[in-house]
Length: 223
Image (tube, rainbow, N blue to C red; front, side):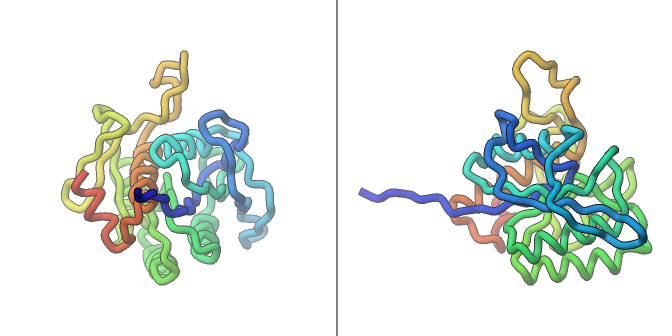
């Protein structure tokens, strides 16, 4: 008799933090708080969520990959906005911690920062980190989602949570967060950020089945 043992998959969630006490999240393996202050990015250990958005993303990932190890990278503080350098630092942190996947439910539309993102993503690739990110924001191409080697995602509110499409190099997933009992889905978090979380969760589930990272995008594209 053979016994299948799933591989350990380490997933970083760069967002508003994660609430480890939420019933849809459970254990959080660690994390970091990042903030841009006095022209530098500072790090601390305050990674818990105060806004709810990152927790919704983590819960959505957990629905697809219940055994994944989640790491909170808190880059949003009082609102869902952050400095570009903070986002770049989040990629660097995930790379240095040898995470397997980084969920970026956000992006940057400043084309002038493309070389910075390209360099950060190249280092991430060398470290074995797979980045899942929004392909566009408000109709504009988004960084790092439009870069080669990044799993780019768009949202379709008509898709079910376990469905995915692949069109012209972009993955399309449901825009709805993991449902909460008694709460209409329209009142929960939704948008491309949650579509990214769905794809990250599906990717984590494949890695747990020992799919090689070099084959991950192809396996996701096959549905």
